[in-house]
Length: 225
Image: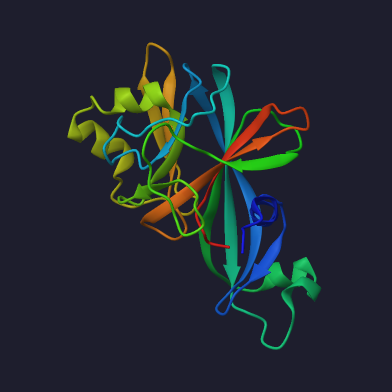
């Protein structure tokens, strides 16, 4: 059965949306992460500490500039036994003790307009795909980013001590686990990374377009929901 990308991403990118599984009830909330500078407009989804600077950018590029980065965080609560979460008032859900917070998606906003259609984000050349046929990138150090190709190429020249000071804190921040820095001072290109809610693994990204076909956003789904 084909995956409905729009339905899948609507579950992730809606403030206050609620979902449940066998262990938790979740409520989605957006967390602004600041701007990402794209001097080339070539966007890369990757673990910034694995084969840094080698991951291929998406085949779809955008106009160079500064764009807002957002994390979508799933706030997890212990389930309401015998009750349907969607029928429980949001105030009652929030009054329960939080069990966890997990970063469910990372969104780079190119145009703050409604997304009319979604498509898989592709890269040039060979790529690993998941069981649904979507191109995926591995995460092996617990970090994921959407950043400009130049920012990652510049990061690849850093000494390990510099990388450790920024991206390997002794006490990782709570979800979304934001870590980042300007990696290319000449262009202002920066890398902002988050901690995927399902940890290390392999994740697919998608391109959202407006009704007129312009790129509205890039999103990486961390498969929490």
